[in-house]
Image (cartoon, rainbow, N blue to C red; front, side, top):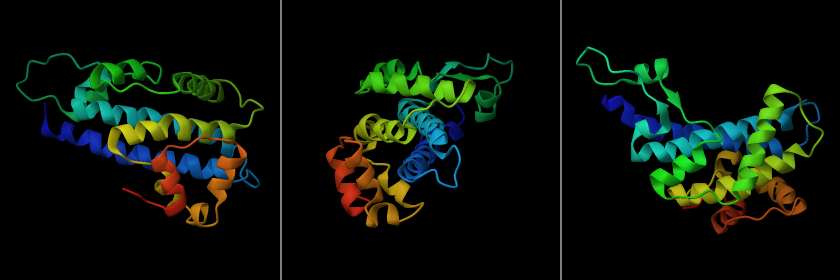
Length: 200
């Protein structure tokens, strides 16, 4: 494999954490003057989840996130990122829990929330926005599915990435207010980040 493929995991991790932070930020505040902001949090958070899980899998080996790789060519060149972008196929959101478990031994807690959130994302992307508390569902997914995974993957939390969009999110207690109002449980690392910003 080409050495450039080794950079994939770090890039995906950083991109995924920033996306997750954006989803948390948008789910915290009202949709006033921001039509469909809460619906977009579902699609952003699900995309972030895919990227973050693939980032962890690709730390084992970059090709493990692909269900289909480019065919062997007659050249003696190493497999490059451009080859993977052109004709590779990565695992889907639905397939990732099994791949994660098989490659790292890590299981997704609250797997039913993970699967339900994926179906919600698909409904929004391919059909219509349902009349549901989408901000609550996004925050529940981020805090009860992804935050435990981020802690297991890298001893990390996405909460400081949400704060980067607006430091009032934590300093003025907006995110904490939403978590309490919606009765969402937190990991100890998430709770510490909620009170003090970036930790660890």
